[in-house]
Length: 271
Ligand SMILES: [Zn+2]
Ligand SMILES: [Zn+2]
Image (tube, rainbow, N blue to C red; front, top):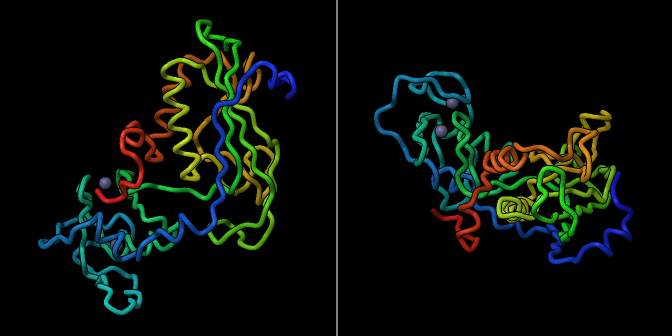
């Protein structure tokens, strides 16, 4: 199905490689959960006559969650406090949102449970590995006027971290290295740049149960579709596919990875 690796080396030149080793750097940069909530939500004075989308109880009733003990000097969130997201304006119990945040990866970002707007930089749970990018002269079916970008993802097996389904247990890696293809035109290169952002934010893969084999505790795709077949489309994951680039752009956007991420020189977590 794929070129033998040696042939790929001959056909292409390597121009990008990023190895991600997620020590504690990403996790350590996370702030106190209460601060994250208060950065992206403001307290509402007059409580609207609506239900909280998390607990489904009326906003005029207090949240059923308990206020967690706060560290010294920290500002706590009370069960009756109703908050409004600063951009989308959706309202809910701030304590319910805090509980939802504490159940997640605690990466300093929030996602409105109502409209899915992302606040801050959403990061995922992709294990450490390597993303390499090569240029291939050959064209993809459906893109006759340009060459091809080849991405190679390599992830070795390892031990699950606290952000994974079964911390301390092994995860397996089937079908790696995984070879993926994009047309080497303007739109394909834009997708590539966004995939690099998604890789650095640990959003391309996750550890879970394989939907094809049912195997648990294995590295799986995370909802951002890739084309793994170059010269045919027998699997449905190949070319031609005229809608692919638009589809993957919207999948990236739903993870908070948009063109805006390419403009700002990173570390713009305060907005
Ligand atoms: Zn609630
Ligand atoms: Zn919203």
